[in-house]
Image: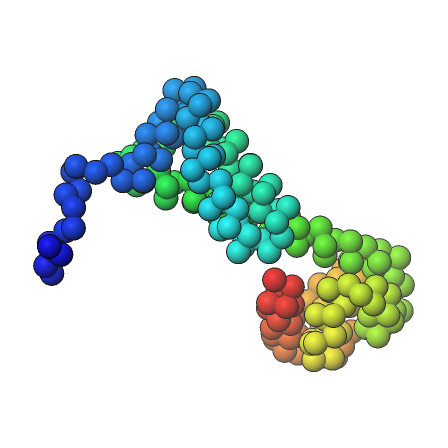
Length: 195
């Protein structure tokens, strides 16, 4: 007979939920039980890769995030407190945090490589010259090309020449507020494009 509205289909106190089982495994890890970690990996590893893959978009990075997360679980299992939430929530919070760290690191390295071409830039180089120095296939060049020319110039000159906003406003003969607005909006557009 099906349950009627408002009635549970089974009694919660009679059934150990998957979240409870994960909580117990994490608590066992805190006690040094490496078999508990192996069981946790077996139960959640595949699902964790799926979650990390949605964030990182590359399987190798998703696998790295999952493995790093299990190392962190092993090291910090004693910090898990069931009264603050279930084990699955804690486990996936670690995974999301680690995935975002990897994403930030990957984005920073990509941009650092692209921006290295500006190290030898001459003070006389204008925005067009600086744009030509970027690798034609780079993500940064592609995203910069989408910006309005004025915003692109402000960002390129700022990065390549290390000018303050005040110095750049003077060089471009713009009000300081306008320049700051262009750079802020341009950087927001770049961030969205590069993600």
